[in-house]
Length: 457
Image (cartoon, rainbow, N blue to C red; front, side, top):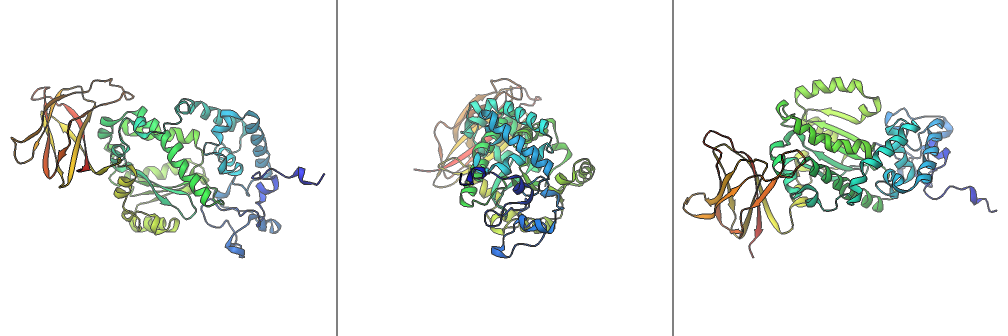
């Protein structure tokens, strides 16, 4: 016996390490907020080891350190060990659910996320994993929808126009920055292009193919990175009470329902910015209902000067979009770069409400050629045509009958029609016209126009 048989496998933490942290030469336990944990930074290499605190008897009082590797109590370690054994014993999809971001996350941080989500109550943790395994079962059969177009039923750029969400960069602690703009969520337009089922599938795609890849790429480049979480910015600018419709709440609920069960504890820090007064008053009440640790992760900041400063404390300026006070590309450009279809130079979108008639004017630039597609859920027939904006007799697409032909439930797909069998070459100023067949005093409904500009060959 050489004495090594009792050593834990590589990557596995001992009970002592889970309570006090790994030794400095092996690993430096980072604080969840990306800054040094309570106490002074270690001078050697500027890195901090929790173990260096052990002899002094100091214990972190930061609520964000609760339940983190290096900060667990003996009771929490006992539950951790029991959970670890159960995960290995069951294996299969139970283990795959726990390690949804792959084994590269590391067991201490991965298992810790699930345990903290249920406050280290063992039976509750097991029940949560079993529920998550069931929730993700159908999506797993489809490999979590690797093709976003098939998932949504439309191009992701259309979805992002209706509900802008993006990962523009990384925070100082390595966590991806996620910006969401529910204040400009256009539910009428969203209803025209996809379904709640499509949104659900697309969210699986984002979490298991997009977000996961970002985490894994950063982990490979920076092996010490272990906080598989996000620094989130929730921008409520333009939010009004009228926007909080049943459909809008269903869209948000569809996404958060998956995350709360299948991806626990992935919120590192959330800044809620540009909140209207009615939301600020509501938040002051809600904050009293949640535990101190969760509340400490969420900051409500209405002043632009204040939230820009806070964002720069968490993220380098180059990682922050210019429209949020940084030096990175503005969110509109970042979304175009990320989601525009291959070969597309520009995209233009417009929701058109058609009473007895309606129209949308759009320009095709010189050297470009355009495809025009229309989308709807309206069962009222309209006649759609494309003419020259100034020369009414110049017709590019003659009158085409268009109506929704599918079901009417939230999970039924909308109907789309490519109007341009041949692309329209620029320069040209177009008018996409809608004429209702429902009668002079009847409203035909909402129609979404999508225009893609290609380089003319």
